[in-house]
Length: 55
Image 1 (cartoon, rainbow, N blue to C red):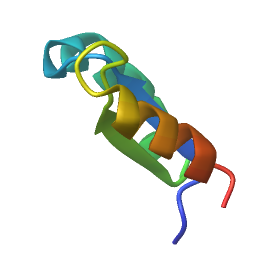
Image 2: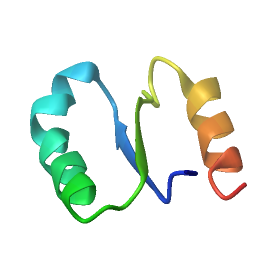
Image 3: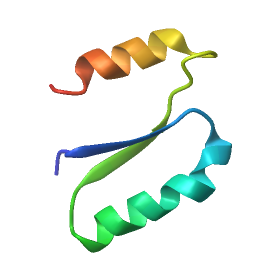
């Protein structure tokens, strides 16, 4: 199933906080994806993710 929500983190160390959002989405049956996208270290990846998010 195509994800409806993106759980986006600037660093993998943010997962401890963001996992709660992912757990809530999973409990509600809402398909999601999780991705580390740093605006500082990988700006091209960030722009690509943002431009493709609605597709």
